[in-house]
Image 1 (cartoon, rainbow, N blue to C red):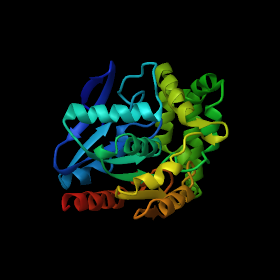
Image 2 (cartoon, helix red, strand yellow; image 1 turned 120 degrees about the vertical axis):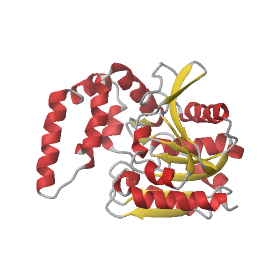
Image 3 (cartoon, rainbow, N blue to C red; image 1 turned 135 degrees about the horizontal axis):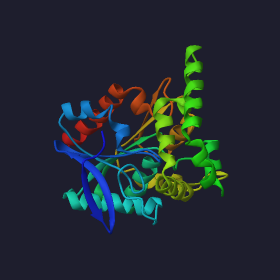
Image 4 (cartoon, helix red, strand yellow; image 1 turned 90 degrees about the vertical axis):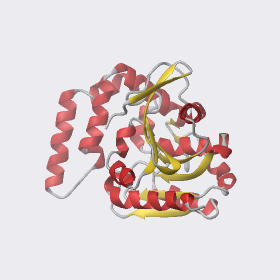
Length: 284
């Protein structure tokens, strides 16, 4: 579901939803090119458990403003801090997927006193490797290519190929319905501009250009859970294994068969993990 609430922070409109409940605030942070709707399959279980959840469309994404500006991890983390201030929350447990994981790590480093813990889902910022198409999109000229990829005829052809492959048992996450819906949004110039500005702040042609690896030992005081799919084509699960070794007391849970969105591949299991983490904070 699309967020229904708006707040203007430093001149930029941010779309969000808050579902009041018990215990620490769960702040769910989506990945690049996505929106808060990525959590739709998980939200029913969180609501049923009466968890206090805030979902947000990051700057330049979803229904939030797409003004020209700073789309760096530091700027986005500051926006999340300001959103918590606006909502009257001193602390939150950050759940970040992909780019959102990198934002969550940046938040924990910038304002550690505001962070209850981390759940990093196929997180960026934990290794150099990145999917080749993302690296290519960081190059000059991507502004001209994206509209062609988002054209309705291109999308129709990609959907046909995806269905044909599925008939013989081959399923590609990149040709899945959700992925093609995301690509279709690039037909909007403002969406493309915001996406490329965000992407180029964290990825270049050689891979991820922003790394939190050196800062990981500093998060040792935070309860940290990492969740990954073992078939992730975007960011390899080895990033999660390496990070777990560097964060004392952290735990890695791998979803067999899942791609880059384990929270959508098996939302029930993901919600159970999240609620277990949440309940541990409630009982403290």
